[in-house]
Image (cartoon, rainbow over all chains, first blue to last red):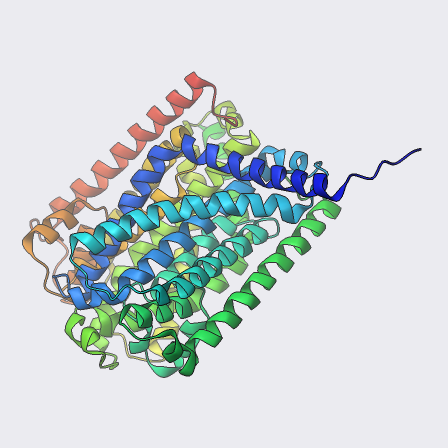
Length: 272
Length: 273
């Protein structure tokens, strides 16, 4: 048998095409569910306002709103990506189509990267629109400088790593759907969407810093308050954020590859 | 009648088996729920303190007792509606939901009853554990009386109706998990707002009345904390509003579920889509 080696350039082009196809597939599915996405984003935003109303004792405290709005953005992105990512994998497992996608010669990491790109779009769109609406609507004052871009990017990666971890666990844990709701609530409460984590008792604050997006929100809040990134570096928030992003991303990818290998071996890519 | 009971028993057994398979998840949820209730007490209505960066983390027995009451309906709804939603979705995706129509029971009864006993068992277990955990930090005071079973029963009926509404929407729109999560959180927010924890404006209280648990929570609080008789007819926690909410949600749930099932059967989307 003669094997023809594919030129490196063509391999790279093929990889990009596979990535783009996966992302495109996810975006098409998102477009089909656009009405539900809009309603869900509105419900999520309304819930945030009602929570702040409760915390404010029957009124919206703009100072608290300014401190928690970045956390709302992070929660909305992480929650949506995790829920839709986990729901998408569960749907494909139940329908038996996940097996088919893994007949592809592409690496599973490439397929998942394409899926994550679509999930990022699906999470970022409503999160950005609702956050911008509240920011403008309530006249929240921030000092927006380029310094905020780095923690914002790291927070987005952290949120997507969490979504990947949940998607990976879908292949292993039967009731992952309901579990994701609980984890999402944990992010909502401990990552600063109710109240800034800095006001928690010390022990709880340390625990909260381990929750996905918490450190990112702390660094974003610091930058939006006009402090330079060097201040976040000096107080340890930024280094811990970098470490959190690296560890959570590595854990998520490793879990995904492990659960996928196990599912392939035990026939878990289709309904059990 | 025998076939009816055998079918119903089968569904209840299936629900309990599913619940048992999810026991690990309950262990994950317990510490989070307990910590959430403990921390929420000092935070509710503390907007000024939060803005100034100083919150008094004193645990008040009365406030924590009230918040636990608000949390119980959230758990009933979580175990009944959230799990019904995911199970229904999995059955649609794997194509087994069509088999429900081979049963002599109405489809809405199969969907709701299969989950109900499991949801109640899970709720009782989790609430007892949370009660024990919270009691270790702060004493909880309730005037235990059988009269509390009246709002509790209304709450369960309302929860069934609410879960059927979510179920009916699932049959038509399938992946509504984000919407479902948003609704559940709103239910919790308005459950807390129904209690004398914070002062809320009239429009907020009025909006809260439309939410399924508000009247049941107000009634539970009246009976278990304020030692009021359960027979008071009027007001947010009164018998009339309690009964109207329960009946209205159950009726709406049955109607929405049947309409959703009819739409899905007509489109041929009961199995996959």
